[in-house]
Image (cartoon, rainbow, N blue to C red):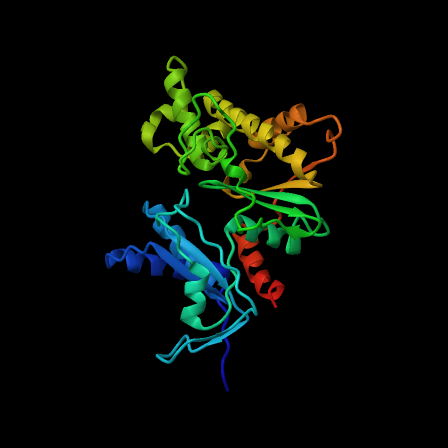
Length: 328
């Protein structure tokens, strides 16, 4: 009789970190990771997060599949998945280490001999939220991911907007400061991402500490170039005025941008997802006020600002899994 055992979530996460540590200790620093959605994705995320803690950023891609076999043997791996291929490639992406154009979905399809569905984390999160989370029943909403960068997924009339080449919805790279804007990884200056991502928050904190040198702050106990958004959040929670002002500024900039986004798609809601979204009222109060102050009268009081109902990376993972069914 075959005994079936199930891993608890914490046990799986711990094993994933152990795998990452073993790779790291052996001197193997991957630049890319591919997770097959049917058990591999959480492990891939654990390994990814371990290397991020060590200062190494991995390009992590999820491939949605219906089934596979041969993983535990030396035989050929057989994957049964979707019926069509979505090929999205990007030239010199802003937050990834590769350069040039990489036809990733085509490479994966050729490797495994099956169609591949591929999308980015923000679009996957939008699908996940629409299927399982705060956007259930909604046909028009915008998903904003606030992490290392700022991503977005735009849903209109129940359909995710990809555009003609798959890259629609790069709202994090809308320019919000034309004069003396911050340099962005995409090559432009003044992008929303440089102000309202986790790295943007840390950047604002460093600027405030330098320009307000006569003010006391808990953040001065930390080396300037090592300050993180978590440090700023902790200081703000303890009443640090500079830290609270950092969040007020971040909320103001994001609110102004969201008011502009409302004008082109008239969403029922804007859903915030990602680490920075966990800042609660520190971010939400100035954000809500700024958005309402900058909305056209016909939109005032109509657009809901919501936090994701999904835990951590669940929205993106579940959204990626939903692609397999969507593509059948």
